[in-house]
Image (cartoon, rainbow, N blue to C red):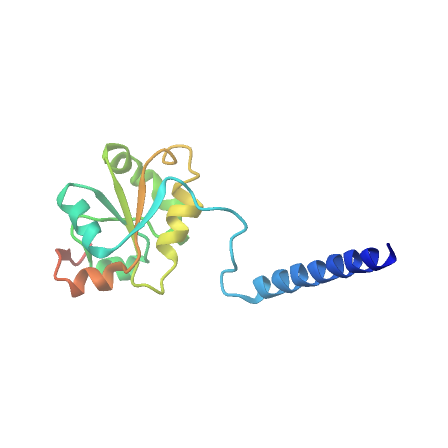
Amino acid sequence: MLKWRNILIELVVISALVFCAGVIFNAFYPDGYKFRGPHDNVITINTQIAYEKYKAGALFLDARSVSEYTSGRVKGSRLLDVEKYFELINGVYDYIDAAKEVVVYCSDLHCNKSHQLALDRLSIDSRTKMKKLYVMTAGFDSWVKNGYPVERGK
């Protein structure tokens, strides 16, 4: 009986150490791991699928900064810089309401702004949370590389 008790204590101690190591690692990991599951209304897509949605009339939201947006963007997209969400969202609500589908993008595979916008803002916003949201994971760089429609300026 004493043997089983010692094994149980060791398991609890090891589990606690692993948990603490995970929390410490997460504290130093860039952007950390999220302590929640994926949202049902947010789907990641590649550039080719995004282009099919573009041709079908989907709304594209650019999660990048104003300077990045004006230097080049998906033709017809709307700016919704994730860092200025609360300043910009009121000007975009009508477009979102009218859209059947919404595609969010940022610059490239290493840019996390599109995921932040879709997961941390739009999917929990009471006015937009019921929309099906798509995140174009490869971003604007891949869009340009494929020769899809772009525009520049304001």
